Amino acid sequence: MELSLGELAERFGGEIHGDDGCMVHAVATLEQAGPGEISFLANPHYRGQLAGTQASAVILAPRYVGDCPTHALVTENPYAVYARVAQLLYPPRRPAPGVHLSACVEASSVLKEGVSVGAQAVIGAQVRLGRDVRIGPGCVVEDGVEIGAGSVLAANVTVCQGSRIGERALIHPGVVIGADGFGFARDREGWIKIPQLGCVIIGDDVEIGANTTVDRGALGDTVIEDGVKLDNQIQVAHNVHIGAHTAIAGCTGIAGSARIGRRCAIGGGVGILGHLEIADDVQITARTLVTQSITASGSYSSGTPLETTAAWRKNHARMKQLDEMAKRLGELERLVRAKIDEDEQWRTPDE
Image (cartoon, rainbow, N blue to C red; front, side, top):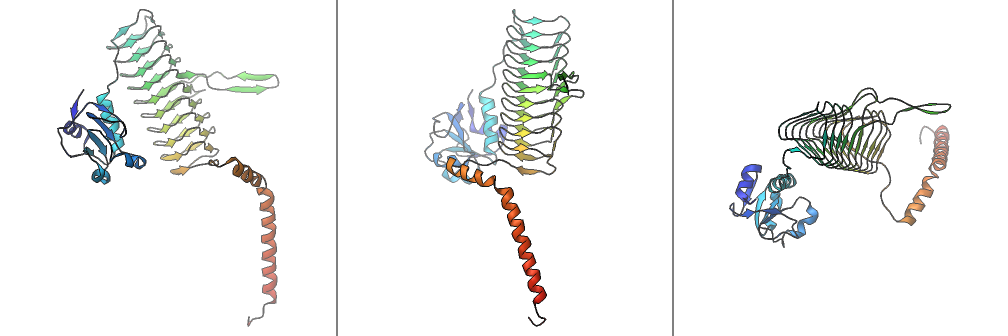
């Protein structure tokens, strides 16, 4: 596909700096782009590469127009416009509708128009697949599952019994939706398994990264609202509720019954304890351990940033002394207050 800069501006907005007839057919980085390719500048860190770029056009913010040696599509949000341009130039490959000969589909299931089911996939009983749903090779869709129109399951995804997935979802390889949550009661002899009777409900336009797991609810349901984006290797425990348009980076673990608000941004490796509530519009930086509810929007962090090993050892040694140092400081403050009070008693009226 080849499009003019003017056509891109008409579709996605922005102003043209240069020739609106400039034709592009691919995207590339500022450093690697050549003729016929369009690049973008969103991070100021790469501003130094702009002057030497060989791209036919660049998507950038108004403040960088003067530095651009070529044609430009000028917009306040160049990264978002780049994403839309890339989607247009690189449409996803759509397999032909139909069921592969090696797939197994129960007769009671309903497959709407345009559905494709890949090799060795298994579709259980009473499954409902909406229009243009794509089920990749090796997927297992258990009994009673519902998947909305236009959703895509890549290879080897497992969707367990009774789970519901909305429209236009994208589920990457190895994801498991609806496995049992980690529910056990302890007695003298060990652990008693608690049946996990809920299911998983996933909204529209959700994306779930490779090898992420979303457990079914114990009694109620695990809920992921519209527009949520989950990275790879995330653990979402039973009865977790994630609000609309929240994004969570890889290796984060969310314990049971935690509730996360809307439009949150959660960094990689974050740990969120169970039964906590996180407000809307909260940002949590990478490797943070959330041990209490967050009731107000804003940015939150924990942990210690990187430093040399020698400095870390010294600081860690001092950290273990904090309790004793706090006691000594409290005693010093008490003595100072006592001394001040003593001096005030002996102060004459004229002093």
